[in-house]
Image (cartoon, rainbow, N blue to C red; front, side):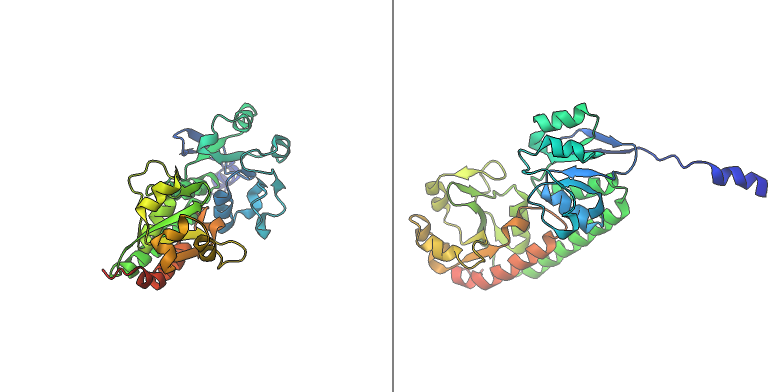
Length: 293
């Protein structure tokens, strides 16, 4: 029996290929779990850090400043990365936006035989799909599944907490000039809905549309949610000094919420904490709106 066991123990373990379908619907196959990942998308870098795979980030953008990935090669911007830096990082997986599928950098990676995963961030379903796929591509599927399940529990807990509260018309304002918002079909609006806010632009096409100021004012949201500037606490004062914006009901009543704009721009495993924060702030400003039901 011992002699029979020897060749079995000495036999090489053959790794099975890993196959997923990315945000563009394209099949991505790796021969083995990715060890050197180059990503143009901050949310995927954050997910890798959360999964304990920060050491596998071989290249990142200048916006990924977490200490855990500081030693990774800096490719520059996410839209115009340095191809030279990217190639020198020797990635075995390259991650880019869905809309970048036809860009020269993606074409170059494919020409070099580097597998490319395109990320779709249009809604929370896409967010969970990215978490699942990254887990598979890193050979960390069980850990990714557990983390995603924890996030779902966190979001459901917030939903339960706000169920009896009055709902308000709340919108995330990405930019004032031009006016860019997170429309109802975006992951931002879906997370705000979990926190108790209904998007007043539910009939507007696209995830992050640009609107005229007149079109925005016509909807007159109850609550505005905006990224912090200059350390926080300045957005309401700025709006009260800005023609058009100062006439909004939310601005007149002080129903303006400030959040970490950088984190809200990244659909990650930290989304549960972001939603809890907005739910708490909505509870504080809702009385200012005059809405009681």
